[in-house]
Image 1 (spheres, rainbow, N blue to C red):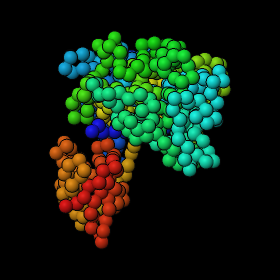
Image 2: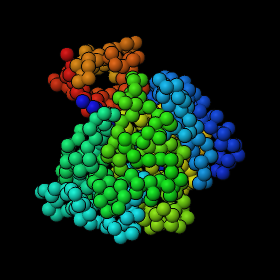
Image 3: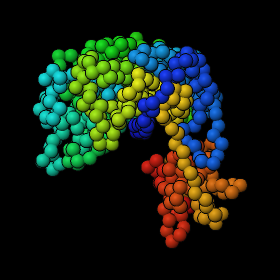
Image 4: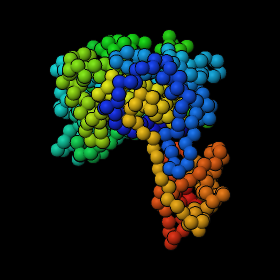
Length: 473
């Protein structure tokens, strides 16, 4: 059974709008020499010394096979480079032309085609999506009596739809059609309305799969061809593709995906028939073109791949700081991505001509934020790490947590070592410190993951972490 890959949404923070123009006194190359030698953890504990790493040291420590970065300034990619390995067994190095899966960053790129079809009158943002679906219909139920699922609500994740993420398929698996995916005949549940559309926000890759079918059923060409001709080729992304399975012509330049433990993904990379939601193959150099194109339209108020009015509406923050495709707030826009064996993030400023993309061929994307923090510090951008101040617990209070626990993924143990709590397990190496925010909430001292503890009669009986429950023995 494949484990569902969770969406990576890297929390956006505002870019500073008053950065002095001294920032270009150095060349971008010299700036990135400093950036790549000054990484710091995103998660930091107040009162403790924060270590500094080189990129290579951090990749080695976190077991990240390969990293690829692109940085754009004033509408041009001024720095791009790959590090580490694209494929360890094949001895292929990562470089700026290595293709990687973009995960959910596929969504805002695919959304451009939907917006184009609105502009041309094919779609209406606020019409019932069933008006545009021919081979499949989204079933009505008690939640659609008063409100309908619309393209607008799909784009900003307020449609009330199920299935927020997809695990992908292995090579050799039977790949379902889009209609089969939507009816739950693949490896996920059926995409259905589970609450009234427009009521609240809930991320749904299932919604974007409906959008994928809408696009393909209202054109004379396939979804892959439509996105290639109307979006990718027009944004200097001609060497990117939504084709899944990946075409053989790209295999020699495609990165192999790796698990957090260093193992290859089955078949080297997953297959996503849910192409609009998760299937874009690209490079940071090409993917950052999305940021450049949208920035130029927005800043210059001139039409480009989309009309200015469309981009303005697309970047207007809605529920949960989501626009009509990208995540957005008053200062910047972008999206994160997580496919099996791959992580990625795109960040672009609304006020400054700065955009960046970081992609890795690993399930563990922690290093992405660390790279962004180093870039932000060098270029005077207001992006801050996650700093937490722990509360002080007495030794007696800490003893309440000590013991062996049975977690759904295996046993673990909390011990008191030199006056500090630490968590150890066969799958956690080395043991990690635990700090308290409250007595019920402790956090992982390396990456900040929350552990929610349950007490009964003053005794700890269990804790929850990442949707898993650990019961005290």
